[in-house]
Amino acid sequence: MATRKNWTRDELLVVLNLYHKLTFGQMHARQPVIISLAEKLGRGANSVALKLVNLASLDPVLKLRGIKGMANASALDLVVWNDFHADLNETVPASEEALRKIFDLDEGSELEVLPNEGVRVRRCPQGPTEAVVTVKQRRGQEYFRDAVVNNFGGRCGVTQLGVRELLVASHILPWGSHANERLNVRNGLCLSRLHDAAFDRGLIAFDDDLRLLLSKRLKQELPQRAIAESFAAYAGEALILPDDAALPDLAFIAEHRKKIFSNT
Image 1: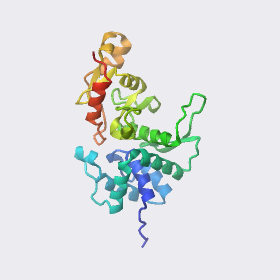
Image 2: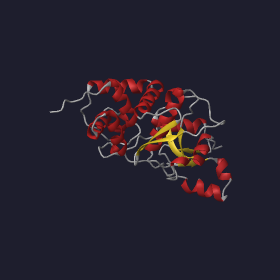
Image 3: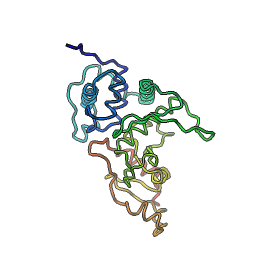
Image 4: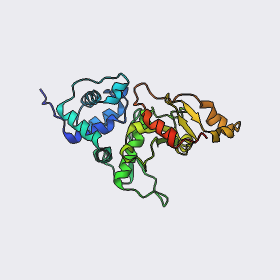
């Protein structure tokens, strides 16, 4: 009989990174991303999938939606879960870097977790306009984008646009002024580039039922076709997320509405 291979702390940090880039319903052994990671870890896909579902039992966000994982999480699972979420600004970049090393990426490459395809590696666009950021910041941003976009099923929460290149992982509470929430998936919305710009500038917001609100400034532009079709057509409609997604934090939504939204 084969000897059971114990999970290490480093492996669990990588699995936790993946955990936040998949929804609960995607945590099964046929999932392409899980298969890819399992091969790199030298484990079976069933083993990785079970570990993800065990970790789900520790997730308070899933419990809010009435979703339970398998109650077989180990003592080490609990310790690593708590350590990971205690300081996302430190643990997330470290886990992202560990994931990149597992897939043997160099600095000129980017890793994307695509639930329907697996793990994709592509060359990064580089040039004189590229923002100068630390490696830690870049890894955090890469993680946040994958986690938020995948949490919304790879589609804009307003329009359901599904072209990944046209989607942005928007921060509800701004990156610059809310350091502790920078990498919190519940501080993210997946929006088209147009709706991200409007949200960032307070031209749109969402109410406590996550329904789209239009600012007075946008309403003044009606019946201009671009405004009518891109914004007014969705006014009053709720954000669309998968049933097993982590919902945006309503306290964050309310703060954005109060401090950034322009409806006067």
